[in-house]
Amino acid sequence: MRSLTYLILLSLFIIGCQKEGPMGQLSAKGNEAFTVYEGHYLDALWKLNPDEATNEGYHKYDSLLVIPNDKSREAMLDFVKLQQDSLARFEVNDLTELNRMDYHILQNQLEYTNWKITVLKSYQWNPGYYNAIPTFAHILNENYAPLTKRLRNFYQKMANLPAYYKEAQKQIKNPVPELTALAIDQQTGGINILEKDFVDSLKKTNIPAAEQKQMTDRAKISADAVRGFVTWLKNLKNDKPRSFRLGKELYEDKFKFEIQSAYTAQQLFNLATERKKQVHKDMAKLSRQLWPKYFGKKAMPADSLDMIAQVLDTLSAKHTTAAYLQSTIEKILPKLSAFIKTKDLLTLDPTKPLLVRKNPAYFGNAAVASLSAPGPYDKNGNSYFNIISLTCLSADKAESYLREYNNYTIQILSIHEGIPGHYAQLVYANKAPSLIKSLFGSGAMVEGWAVYGEQMMLDNGYDDSPEMKLMWYKWHLRSVCNSILDYNVHSNNIRREQAITFLTHEAFQQQAEAEGKWRRVSITSVQLDSYYDGYKEIMDLREAYKAKVGDAKYKVKEFNEKFLSYGNAPVKLIRLAMLGNK
Ligand code: ZN
Ligand code: ZN
Image 1 (cartoon, helix red, strand yellow):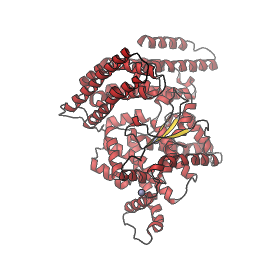
Image 2: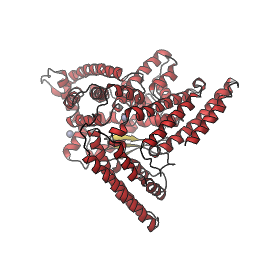
Image 3: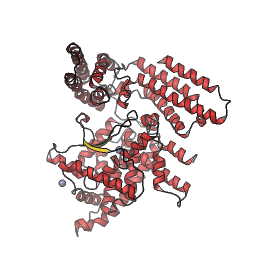
């Protein structure tokens, strides 16, 4: 690996010497060299991190499992250093706009990697760091190569599993209890992949019996290694457990690397707090307007948040049934496409279908709804709108989901996950030919676009009833309050009861939803900021763009398409490209 990177360095140096050529030629060369460099960068990275490679759809290193020890971390730090040197040899101003974004994304990625290893050190306190099983599940469940080939890679990859878990036990010290509990659940849930799913799949192949026996034996040893790790975690003496809260300083740093925002975490928190106040005012106005229609002459509650909650509760009773959940969404999607066409908001690609399906079994207790888009290595794959199946839940539980995804919010959900949200955005992203942006781009851009899309549809008259507007505000408050909550919990130390009260009272969430959010905030950090941050930065950008082109010339479609043409780049880099240095 080292020699390969040296080779890149050397070739870059040679290119660096040709600076005298005419300008046009120079930048063409610089850009060509940069593209070659990106390819080498990725291959070297994937070799060091084969699990991530597999999960991103790059399957050359499927058979490798890296032992997460000091040596492999040092190799990663060497990689960072070498790549930082390599990057520094490019004259950033000679690069095209798109390459320049890649350059900055890589720079950030390298600094982030370095920070994670030398400062954050989650390999010491998060047992979930040692979560190899999902990659095995990916190899087993994703149909990218013949089953026989995938199973043989699976088998080879298992060879290091016992050493992998032994190393984990060496590294983990005073882990976070919440993350320990999660790791115990995940590892326990993963045993079946090795012991059952793998062995069952073997039977479907014509791999010779003797080889199958070897493979089954190794699966047994591997499953025992997982069980051993689980037992060790359960019995671990943890007198001084680390808090799951990141603390102000680590939080700001992580926010900077992960969100790649124009704002600091503290600034975003302040903006979200302001936004929440404004949304409450608007919601109160709408609720007051709707009150007589739904409650007649009944007295309005004095507390405006209580009044809003009652109106929301009444509107939530209008919903579909468990059996029709999927077909309801299937009917909404073409309506959304037609509306976007009529209003001329965005060009959609009719050759890329969006299929609605029930959550695949191996998703486990995943989200209610999500989007699976083809990865950058597999652009021609299908896009799926995954939706929870409610038919096997108890009536009570199903009813609670149905109220949450009522006749109003199910449309907003379809906008968010589907059109023009995640699905449409990722179709555009796959047209922007940049692996770097797809792989290391900005989650805030992706989530922000989906949140922005909800408002854009309503602003253009998709459904201008006050009921819809009020429900959208509730949905929107989720994003806003995600940011407030995440910051308050990780930087300001607020307690569980305060958080639950905040979510149920100020964001109008059901107890179960609020408890779920508490769980999420205690096992993740910063990710919850991506929704509101991305939305806010896109709204800022659109205002600035409008001012630049002038009201007379501004067209929302042009803004949307230009914005999406850069792929999953951080909004602040897109802003630079769209506005220049403003
Ligand atoms: Zn009901
Ligand atoms: Zn989303």
